[in-house]
Image (cartoon, rainbow, N blue to C red):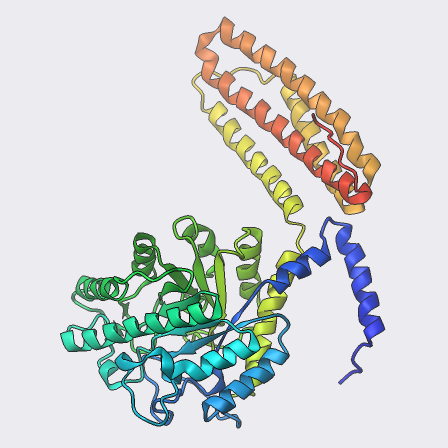
Length: 497
């Protein structure tokens, strides 16, 4: 391995990067300050391969499998907390912990899951207080005799359903106790494995049962300052390849209607889907979402997160949409083939790296350029409509000149942005005035045509729309030029007042 950089080398490299980013309008200090406020929720189950303390030698169920036999698996709460302390020490920032119900500490006495209470997690709460961690929680609806049929909250057996309803109610109470004690709301997330390997005759009945179970679980109101309820969807899993009761559509509808968080796990969809594309749609209808950042590989959903294109896109969408205050970010993977502490650190640091990369984008400038491209598409559509009009007219020469000038302005503003050339940026003010003058003449000419021959009104309207769109495109280029001037001089100038 190479020699690590010295402190001076790091300082010099950052100073250069800060200057370069400032050149495109990005404040690196502001980006780092925003990153410090990002709190990831690390998942406790990476440390012991989802074994828990209830029956650590039992088999996993619910389509969950941890592969590998790397030494060092945590065997007790003390060992697990010690491993977590080591992981947190290598992850910049202040972060949370996500607990499953099977990590209760019951003093060696068997306690059924529907009888779990906050006192069974007192050790975790004391540790969280001492280390400044928030806590999140999950009922464990798998790896239990009452889940052997593959169904829990959607089971046709009323006794099975009732057991899991009581467990989830207890889990909400535990989550709320964490929120009250730590002063930060606990996200209590419900995921169930319910589904079938083959195609069912009746898809609706289990979903109706699941809805009724959830309604019962969430019936008692809990202060959102203490507990936030979330429901988690999945496309398919081992043992539920053909039918999952809690599908994306089911839980999205439920979250919208019942004002819960929707949990989107990046490993729970088709390999060609990305949850980055879902966020802007989902957050139009729900207040907040929970992300489980994972890495799906073929049919397996829980690999250590890398700095992949998908990870980058997820965090780009969060940052570009200014959604950091509406998105709770957690990790969810389990890999027993590598050092378990390293898995936590690698996954968490890659999510933070992706977040920082997104925070360092010149988003405003990129958005302006993208919108300029939209104008070009809009013009093409309007020209097509004009050609289909019942009566054609000759395009005013001024409209051709407007198009050529707007295209030239777009290239000029791009050049000014790349080179931070203030003189070139300012030159766009005169060009914008020329476009405005041309628009006035084109509008006058077209209105004269409309007054002379009303049968040509459709075509006149389309061409007026084209003129207006070209004028807006010219305005966009001067908006970009104004930002270039501000970046280069720290002075605000208005070019197209």
